[in-house]
Length: 267
Picture 1 (cartoon, one colour):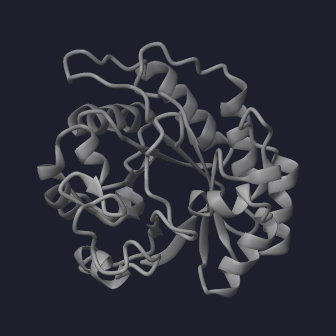
Picture 2: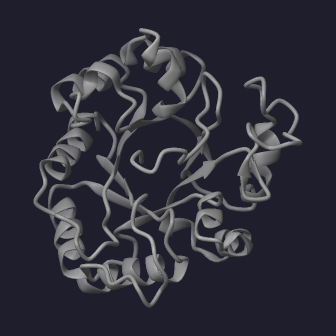
C-alpha cells in the first residue's frame, strides 16, 4: 500500500503564503510517492472559484515526474439534480490528464452534499454512466467516494455504472471509513473494507477518528493527534492483510494532515 498525502492537509500553510509547488516538492522529498491534488487546496493552481487550472497543475507533474498525482473534486453525483454540464467537471478531467505524467490519469469525485435515506435519493445514473464512459474514452481512471449517503445506495449506483459500461472495476471506489459516521453507518465500515476486492479500491483515506468524531476534537485524542504526530502505523494495520498498490491517503488536522469533511462544500 503506497502512502500518500492529500493537499488539503496543507490548507493552513497555503493560507500563510506557502506555494503548492514547494509543498509538493517537500512531500516528494519526504518520500511520499502519491499526492492527491484536492480542489479548494491548490493555491494558485486553481481559480478563486475553485476551478482547476490544468496549465499550472501540469507544472507540478513536470517538476515531480516520480510522483503519482490524482485530481480530486466535489460533485453531487448521487443527486438527481446534479448538473453534469458544469465547467468544473470538464476542467477536472483536464486536470487529471495534465498531471498524469508517466502514470494513469486519475480523477476522484466525492459527493459531500447529497443527503437522505435510501428511499429518498434517486441518482441520475444515466448521466453518471455518460461521465464514466467519457473518462474511459480519455484514458482517465475515475474514482467515486461517498460521504453523507447510505453505503448501499452508493455501491449499488457504482455497480449500475459498471454493468452499463461492461466494466468490473470502472469506476473505482475511494474508501473512507470515517465517512460512514456522517451517514450514521459507522458499524459497517470495517466489515465492508475487508469484504471488497482490492482491485475495486483505488485508495483508502486514513484519519484519526473515533466514536464518530475526528480526534483533533475528541475529548480523549489518540497519542499525537493534537501535535501533528499521529500513530499512522496503527491506522494502517487494518489494511495490511490486503496486497497491491492502492493509495493510503493520510489526512489529519495539523499542518500536514487534514481533519476531514469539516466543511460540506469541500471535497
